[in-house]
Amino acid sequence: MSSLQLFWFILIGVLFAGFFFLEGFDFGVGMSVKTLAKNDQEKDQVIQTIGPVWDGNEVWLISAGGAMFASFPMWYASLFSGYYLILFIILAGLIIRGVSFEFRSGMPENKKWIWDWTLAIGSFIVPFFFGILFISMIQGMPMDANGDMMARFTDYINVFSVVGGIALLLLCYLHGMNYISLKTTGPIRERAKKYAQALYWVLYVGLVVFAILMYFQTDFFTLHPVSTISLLAAIVLLTVAANYCSYTNKELTAFLTSGFTLIALVALLFTGMFPRVLISSTNAAHDLLIANASSSPYTLKIMSYTAIGLLPFILAYIAWTYYIFRKRVKHTEIAGYGE
Image (tube, rainbow, N blue to C red):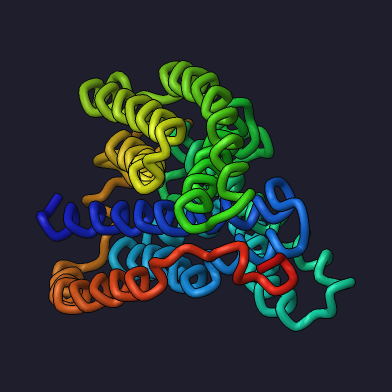
């Protein structure tokens, strides 16, 4: 394994971590339209909190997929062909969610409910099926020496993958609640805090079940015991910290710690897979490794120069965008809500 191969494996992990940190609260806000908001004005209020940023946040996913395609074409080919149907469902969720913002704003009041539902359903589908994808991937899939998957339904959908999907869904929802608490005023702000305070206790149970299943269903504790235990402990500690901050009105800290929980989860999955990018459940000799799944050294070198040159400008633009739209969305600014 070369240093450039390792660099791109880490970079892809960073891009997925950035996607779940930033898009995670978008999903939570999208789900809140049907679970938290009580009237049309509150729905408008929560949607306005992500209106300027949601599409930019999705660029992290596109970048992760593009980086995988260019740096690890074997990984990309095996993953996207083996998970074709699940990725199709994720794409459908992203599409109906994306058009909901535009169509909802142009609809008469009596028809907005249609796009409220598509926004909520799309926001539910994407994190749940990403959880299914990643957890089934770390369990291992039946794969031959060419990287072709021959999986059955139960290889994708099983107890562990469903628990992982629900856990990721709940993490994103709580991240969204913390974001709404940070970015709004009025009744919905307090309601979001109460929802988060109640759901964190559900998450604690989910994390325990998730850790137990990971112990029995993966080889993470055997191959990487220190990093696996450390990152699981970090996930629990960050969850407790976010829960505590929701009680003490430390809204920014609650938001950041819930986001760092998602980053720690991505780090857990990537460090557990290392030095593999795909795990074969039938024969360890068929595992797809970082060392043999990448592009040529020259390609990785050119891509590295490009990424290092462009990344500071992209990060600066993202930081500037969030700075510009840093103010809370006040309930009194929503038409018809009051003065």
